[in-house]
Length: 224
Image (cartoon, rainbow, N blue to C red):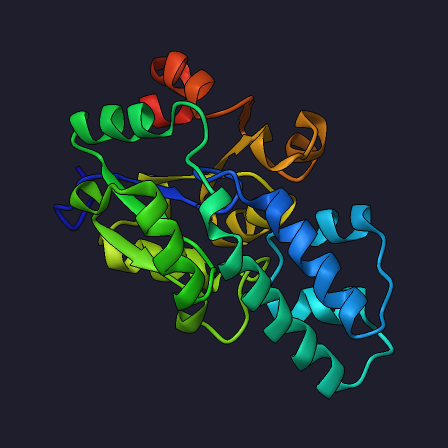
């Protein structure tokens, strides 16, 4: 139990962590960039997935005008929404969340997805009945790797950093957690190698939600 009386919390990124969406983001960003006349290699896009949307555009289109970046963002959103039927939970997601809820730990969706994308992701997950709190990109001016979204998730859960663990799939999640003082557990489901997540600050790395569930007792979550 935390100092505030709230149960400890497990904070989850959603994109690429609970829902198999990272490669769809790569494809839809690539289409958007192509349509605005900006060629960007897919590996560069993949490396930026999980980064705040504005920072992603600045990194990948450093010489583009604001109008071009804005158009690319609109197109990405349109293509992503049109492809939403391709999204599905990652292996073991529902079982992992149910096991965490059974331990009387709070489940918090600490995402920096837009409200529109979050609505799609929540429908794909279908676990609102066991979710304690949710964040979105609209809660902060700049999302990951800034720690603000993590701080808001902690506040909504009513816990301090030491009574929480964050589960994510990118180095941007890891950097945000390091700045917020929250233990970070990495999953390889977003396409990042284990060593890359460890180098960014992960306390442990698992292949997917199913493997994390198998080793839950020995993971940082098991020590909450």
